[in-house]
Length: 460
Image (cartoon, rainbow, N blue to C red):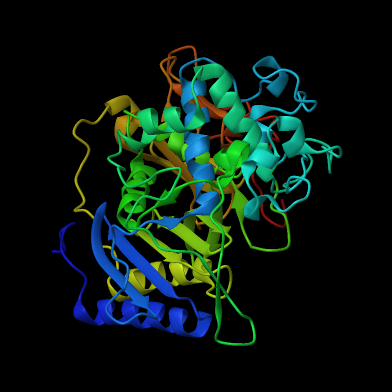
């Protein structure tokens, strides 16, 4: 059986190396580095470089650009979990005087606040942050591109506001809070606001000639919360393990799961997928990948984590453009998942079985549609169409004896038992839908009633 620490098969490792070698060569990147993690453990690292014998290793820093937003979102959710703010709060409640105070914290996290994508000229990624000393300099005169909450529109200034929000509530700089509350607990000692040796240099590669130009590495100032960080593949693998199941020292599993839920309708255009709270979410080949892509002049970065396979991939390049590293990182996940599919844990029975809940399992009918109710761990229930069709969901138990939907059409809806006078269960009520033991059970309170003559044939 495969153990978490077991390395990948030689054929899989060669396929991974071939993919990044092709990416570095075709994308004409000075260097290219990647790592794969499975079941929370690093299992492969590879690198290519235009300088013989000088390929970067897992401890070499690259600039990660918008991957920084994942960390900023974690800090905001920590504030929420501590009761210091609510995601539905208008920004003005905690950070007055911005001029866009009516937008909510949730809208800023999910890029649906309607703010501009970039700050006003000059190009903020290649100029010192000192040119934008105030939030007004970051937002510019045209602060709103769309009505808040209507659509997803990616906004770097929006994450600048979140960085300022963190500083206002915590009373410390974004960098200090990040170091204390996320990086140190997760052991990410090689992630920092500025480069720390050994680190890669950033390059622009001429589009029509094999020539390079060094890129400036500016301090982004107020824009830091949107894209300042430098990191290593080893550190980002640690962060991928955190995305897998949370860490109570940083953010609980339920809040990490909340980050992965789409927060606004998908925007057509550059990429296919949704945006959660600080996380991009894409679907491909029947798998869901969460993480982020990032770029700044001279650097490209991507982290993808696939929960179904428990595989993560981190990819860096030190080129302004060229390698399609978002796609490469996704393909690294594909290679591992397809060459070495995840071996499931052994089936085990429940530690205890509640006889009353066991009696609820089996067929239930919504009208004439047949469903199966199954008993899960921790008094949870799962309702699915008997043919795999229709609206299904998982439910978790509440202390009051009801259940709440976790996903699908019934997410957030209440499932409750409606009992007869003798205490027996008459039917299930799910958001006003009645589920009975027989199709249109005459003994149950079916909306609209049941014809007193019952079921009949063609001549009835």
